[in-house]
Length: 192
Length: 183
Image 1 (cartoon, rainbow over the protein chains, first blue to last red):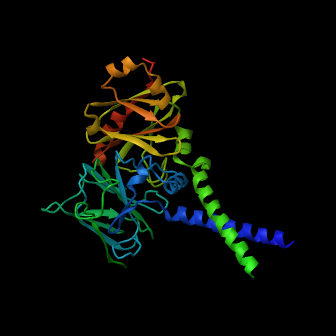
Image 2 (image 1 turned 180 degrees about the vertical axis):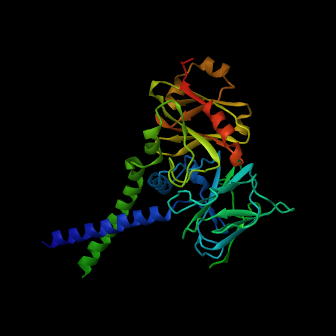
Image 3 (image 1 turned 120 degrees about the vertical axis):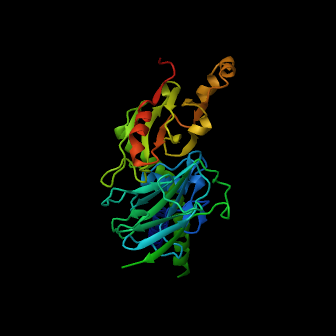
């Protein structure tokens, strides 16, 4: 009886610990070898055959195709530079330059990876659409209401994710965060 | 008390095994992974254009809306495939994924260096069976080895601005993915 109760208890602990850890790993999108620059994180290794089991599991669960490393690298931001989650009701400013790449695109998704409906049907920018300063830097305003310049509408959603994809870029598995990979700063400017 | 602690410790260790096992098995059992989603819309060994993602619907999450995209869901059990993708104005890329959505190879228009990206896709076994002299005479042929018998080829063309989406789509419409022996 004691043995039965004991092993039952152990199995319950095993199920809670095992499935709980799996759930946490998948919802957090855990994978090895992240490259974090400011608010941005990329997993260059996830786009190669060496993708670790955690990366594979979270890709299968989301149902997306990872950006292959020979194609490009995708940087994701879900919070600003001070760690505050990106809020679609606030004005968030992206400023600076990007690492070298032939093209890049910036896209706004909700937390399920869907595009967010807005009045002008703009879901992102490509590097060619951006209006730049004389020094090559740029500023993008991510805000619910229209702004002059590079305005990326949020549609007023509470939480969103920004994905900056660099195509045909030297940034890869061996890249270290540093001066050669400058990512734009992400700053929350004003919240109503 | 000690006994229960030991049971809990044993349970936690077993939980670690459960965790690793579920993580490893998950890609094999997922029914909503990219391959399964695309298997419903894309017939095998042919190029299928994917609709552009919109807020209401998208073939997959986290698709880049600046790209026109198409997929070729391949099955190499009947022999190698030939893939040809005309290069669009801005940026064209071809990425290869295994049945379990692992990216194993990608090439873009600049790396291919031609107006048309031409590739042959075969399994390691099929590559080994190729006559050696053919391998030498075909030194300029680009051969990609697939680790799995089935998988996905994602073909994408960038539209640097929304007005350039129609030409990007039409260049993808000319992409072909055929069995090697077919004309």
